[in-house]
Image (tube, rainbow, N blue to C red; front, side, top):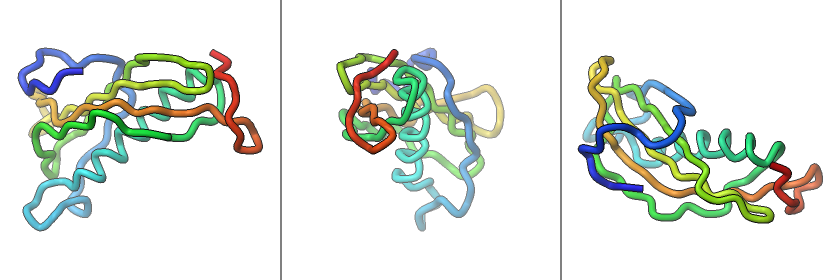
Length: 130
């Protein structure tokens, strides 16, 4: 993972895109970091479920770095890459990029590493099947 705002291309696979709305802002007009983190968690879980071939839960967020603000009207694009698959856990590298003014210009706004654990149907840890 890198925290440079001028990285040329996102790392990983585009997993979700969503529009930043006024209801998600703080008094300064910036999108709440918690909203961005939530979108990253959703994307990471989508990637982890594909690897685990079943239910997963978030157990840790590591190395989270906010680089630039997200503004109302930005399209938040979240990219994921599987970094490590353990016996029961999956580490997912996640980058969030904002497309400004609905055009191709984009800026990296945050990155992090999220850890997910595979669960069975009763909610107990299970081996990753992937």
